[in-house]
Structures are given as C-alpha cells and as structure tokens.
Length: 235
Length: 405
Image (cartoon, rainbow over all chains, first blue to last red; front, side, top):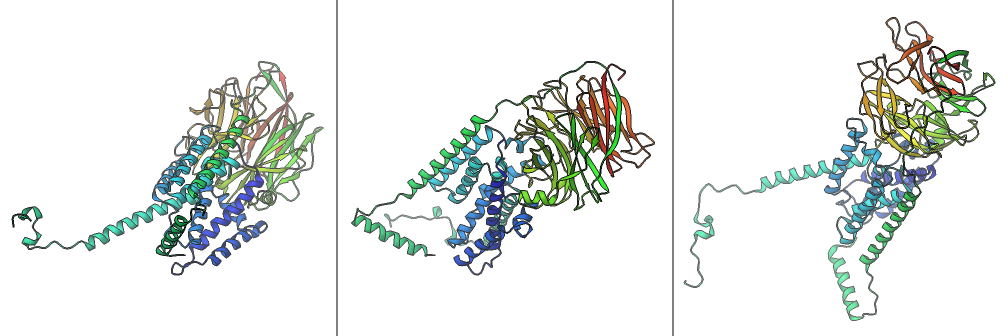
C-alpha cells in the first residue's frame, strides 16, 4: 500500500473539484445557445478561483467534507466534456455505452462489497502491491492502443490520464479503484445507460409509427419479383 | 467552428500544396501521439518498478509479549481515580492508552458538551509519578479541517499507539457529511510524546466517498515493528476490518475480519505467531460476544461460534498478558442490570472459556461503565473506561506470579 502525500491530495482535490464544478456549471448552460469560448474560460477561471479560497469559503472544503476527492477518471471525463464544449461539439462522446456498462457493473460489485453484502475484498485488492499496478499498466497499454487506432480516443485518453495519475503519484488515495471510479461517476454511468435505453426505446416507437400500413388489397404490382416473368433477350 | 465541408476543402488544399512542393514538412501526429503514449507508459512502468522494489514483500506476523512467568497470576489493585476533566466539558467518552518511556502512560479521550457536539475535542493526559497531568487538547474539528483542506463535521473515538521510535500515532474518528456512519479516520502523529500533533492523512478505507470507517479498540504489535489497527464499518451493515502499518506508520494492507454483518469494534489478541483472535461487539439479536479467528497470521479470517458471554452491543478490551493468559474487560448484562452497568474483568487460558476475575465497576440499572481499555506496562495493568459518560476512570493493578486466577 503506497499512499500519496497529504499536500498532493489537497492540491489534487482543489484542482479536481474545480474541473468537476466547471463541468456542472457548463451543463446548466441553456442548450439552445452554444457556449462561447470566452464564457467557458470564465467559468473555468471562476471555478479555480473559488477553489483557491481559504477554509470554509472554498467549495472544496464542503465538497471534500461530503465526497473527499473525485476519482481521476471523473476528472478526466469532465475535462473531456469541457474540451468538447470548447470545440463546440454538442453531442458528447465522453461516456460511451461500453465504458458506462463496465463502470456500472464493476461499481455495483464494488459497492455491494463495501457495504458488507459481499465479502470478497474487492476494494482492498486496489491497494495490492503487484496485481493492482500490473492491472493499471495493462489497462494503460490498452488505452494507448485505442488512442493510436482512433477507437474512442477521448474516453481512452481520460482513462489513461487517471491511470497515469495513479501510477506516478498514487492520486487520489493510493487505491486503484479510487482512481477509476467514485459514486458520482457511477451515477453518471447509470444515467448514461438509462438515457441510451430511453433513446433506443424512443427510436423503436418512432420506427413503428413510420412503418407503412399493410395494403389490405393484393395487387399484381406487389407480387414478388420472382413471380414475374422477366427476360431482356427473348422479348 | 468550421463546417466539415470547409474543413475538408482546407485540408484538400493543403494536400495539393504539399504535392506541388515536397519541401513542406509533413507532421505525423499519429506517430507523435504514439511516442507520447509510449513514453507515458514507460514512465508509469518505471514508477511502479521503483515502488515495488522498495516495498516489503512478506506480511509481518503478530508479536508476542515476552513471557515473564507462566501460570496463574494475582491482580492487586494499586489505585483508582478519575483522569482530570477539561474545564467546562461535562461529557467524556472513549478513552485510549499508550505507554511512554519510564513506566509512564498517555491517555486520550474525547470531551465536550455532549456526544457529537460541535465543541467535542480529543484531549490527552500523562500518567507519571502516580498522578495524571492536567489535560490538553490535541485535536478538534477545526484543527483537523484546517490541516486536511476539507471540513470535518464532528470528532469521535481516539485510538493511540507508540511506535518503536517513540512517535505517538493517534487515530481519530472524524465524520464527513452525516452521522457516525459517515466517519473517516484521521491519522495524526506526535514526535514530542503527545505535546503536539501533525496530521499525516485520512486513511483510505472505503470506495463510498471514503466514509463509514471508525476506530475504537487498541492496536496490536507486529514482529517487524509495525502494528495492526482494528477498524470497523457501520452503514446499515456492521463489519470489522484490520489495517496493517509498517514500522514507520505507513499503512501496508487492509482486510475484512470474517463475513458477519452485525459485528464491530474488534478486540484483537495474538494467541501465537500464526493464530490470532478477534472478540467482537454484537449488534445482532443473539446478544452474545462474537468471535473470529485467523490461523495464518491475519492473512485470512473466519467467523467462530459466539462465546458463552452476553454482549448487549457494548465494546470490550482484551490483551495477552506476559504470563501467556488472556484478560478481557467487558460489560456483563445480568438480569438486574442494564447493558453497560457492570464492567467485568475475565481471564482465559485459551480464549474460549473465560472465568470472572472481578467486577471493576458495578452500578444500578441505567448506570454506564463502558468502552474499556487495557494496557500492561511492566508488572502493572492499567485500566481506563468511561464513567457515567462524565469522566474517564483509571484503575491500576499489580500483576504478580502465582495466585488463583
């Protein structure tokens, strides 16, 4: 178990919460009008300035009281969402369904274990001296392959950043799980899956409405082609 | 933002210019990205390699106190007193002791206007030359919050340990947003025998915003100079855990004790270098003292059948005497008493069958003598416990070879 220094954790907490807070504020921006880069930069600067305030004046004081530190992946996803907004991309690719599915399932097992319903010690394995770092390196290599091949580059870069933060500085807590997931990110993944499921069911309903009603009277024009005699040579 | 068609047109124009003039350098962003990623992964690999080469690879085993004498012992009470209370603090609870050089003792507890009150702070007092010093404050929610960079809502149980370099490690329950179930454990360290403390960190114990981890019972020494800190979880389900520390006070591992979901506040005792027992406060309807064991030096744990001792959801303390026997201080719930009105000292040779030594404190139903702590220093046994939620009581006994217990 290697844990980060407290001063590094405090710095990470302030920067991480600044990114998360800025992302939340941007999400509240009205959808009808795209956010200008100036407005985005102002939100980010305000968020950073607020986090730098001392003691109880800082939102980091209260966010840390409730949630301690955001996971590296949550910060990475928020940074990615801010980058999407900077480039004017309205349709976000931050939380693809594959990533959301992995987060929902692994987080579900982790939290069932943490509240004592399972007794598998999943969280404790995140402190492992060999297995956790090896898993982290293997996952980083997969992320690099995804980035180079152009598959889900954004989420792969976020994940790579979280894994690098863990491997180099052991942030945020020294546990690999805390680098990859937290209850806020888990809720985001659940919401992303639910939204995708709602969109799919909405599309299916729309498709059903658009399907033409079957004609009750059979006409020769609707006969299968094979039933027609067709030759370009003989006739 | 350019429209895709405009972007394509611009890229196409650049392509034709390059075709016409091959002197224009062609960046290879894909290669640069690949190079950057490979360098990052190599850096990660290097950092992990250095860390792995420096880490200890064998788990330390429990340390057994050197046997001064084997066989029955006699306990003779030497003194009985209350530790001086801080001025204007009517409520006191949850004491912990740790020895200092020169047969001295350092006690910690929390005091304030009431449990969970905003004015609750952790206090300390030193036992030296047969008397307790005036108490001094060592941690408050303000001091912890300032050092941690985020808020602490309330302060709770302290647990103390003196390492082989003489540093005092104090673990303090500090809650986040919520009640005791939202607790975290702050690790603070003193290099001047408890006069002042520096916050080292909040111990990571849970993926749920690192909440619901508490301490109450005493640590256990390990053979490499490290120690085990008993920890417990209590959101809905309650279960005990064990966090191991190396000789420098850095956490090395965390593990759950057994698989029960209604036990907490483990009192850990080493039977041998490989066999370890945990006595557990029972939060179930069984109301019996619960019990778990490890036969591989704490690497894995299994639940044992409950002991034939009542436990109405109260904390206990247990130690292995240098005689090899085991002492336990626990609440005994008799028919004419309430859950915490009798505090009983029991002894065992095997951690299974226990016989009563004495009732350290006994009152009428509704009285409270609870949260005991035991500490052997030389041939003296020190006992502290919560007295009526108003003060911390201290008893001292001489342990002599021979006798009837």
